[in-house]
Amino acid sequence: MSLTTLGMRLSKAALHQSIRNQSFLLKEWIAGGIAALMLTLALAGLWLAFTRSIWLVFALGGVVAVGLLLPFFAAMPVLHPRRIRVSQTPADFGIARWENVNFLAADGVQLRGWFIPPASSTDGPTIVFVHGLGGNRGELLPEAAMLARAGYGALLFDLRNHGRSRGTLTTLGFREVEDVRGAVAYLEMRGDVNRARIGLFGHSMGAATVVRAAARLAQVRVVIAQGAYSSLEENIARGVIAQAGLPPFIFAPLMIWLGERATGLRVNQVRPIDDVASIAPRALLLIHGMRDSVVTVENSRRLYHAANEPKELFLVNAAQHKTPMFASPSEYEKRVTDFLAVHLRGDRVVQPGI
Image 1 (cartoon, helix red, strand yellow):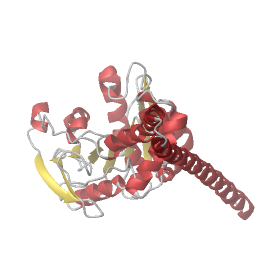
Image 2: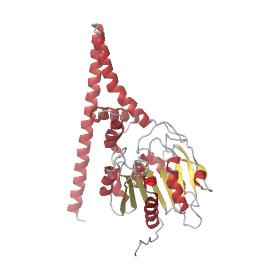
Image 3: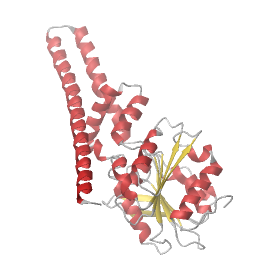
């Protein structure tokens, strides 16, 4: 690549980043303007109280309450999801050998999980499973059991602020990268795991997290991202706010603004689409349900186009957000196991007719 071409690419990347920053600042101003309007209405209400216009006071108070409290109550379950204890263990899926494990995230948060050792007949390939928002380590047990039958080891754990892990704040794929760092470091210390054959499997928020983590962890060999979002900011507006039946244009900026104040982070720091190209030359498999109404299939399509080879996109026709494996079990198992056989274990998969 010539210096001129490299310079043009860097200039283009800088331009795109500048546009994103300007867009983000504009949205910050919109959120600030809406909050200022709410404050103005509140002050007007106080003034009206002194003039004894009690019904106008109630009306303005209602507007302020709706404008501020609805985004607040929408943001809190995202940042502080209700903890759900696991209802099943690997034993319920016919897995005889497994153990409870504890390890630390890279930034010191204590995490709890299960470890399923790889079959002794294999060369120690092991997958880290990362669940979605509000889930726990049991969420991906069916997928882990499927791969355990094929000889793969598995580490399933509760993300920070989920299940039985420590932590008090969920950041939707930002600090959760440190959890994945800790999980990979834990596997690297085990004698029954091949350090050169570690992969990541994430669902939803976990999928966004493993894409971001793999871009920063060179030792990870493969990534499977199921139901991933390409940009957190876009999916807050289209997902959380829209599903609550609120107008995204009004309430999304306020929810984002409140969430950023609570976490100290900026929502545009979680953009898997900016990280996905860095996974190559490691392999990436994107899985998405065509009927997913939580994270639309366009997210995985955008990630696929932004990624470099080797990459695969597996769209499951009848699947919703949490059902790709169950909508088409045979095809799902074949696509996932073939992908791992080639890119993690180095086997040659023979296609029919070859």
